[in-house]
Length: 165
Image (tube, rainbow, N blue to C red; front, top):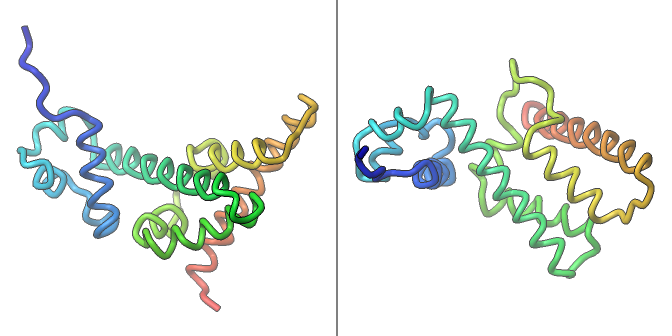
């Protein structure tokens, strides 16, 4: 019988996400994650083929946190859904600056265009959920339109970071 796994992928991602929150993606490396977990680097390298894979999964976890943040603020009812999403975007930037920087302000040179990544899918899902779309054909059109809009929004945000006003 193989030995019991002592450090799970979920624990590794939780530790990496905490490092990302505190110090940014530059701090997410095997030694730092192992230090947070109180273990050697072996469990990290047993679960991830590369640091890039660990960092991508950490980025996906940050995107999931952002999606939950937006959804929570939209459900509060303090503002109409679209205004709530904008207000939540601003509060996320203020309260989680390293996550915000990684999701919206990192250099995307060499990355494939957005559209089928978890963050874009979550943005599209929220838009579709809050627009009361009825027709299946129109749904498909709207989903594609939202994906394109989300892609350009992310590009504009990255340009804003590169060329502040």
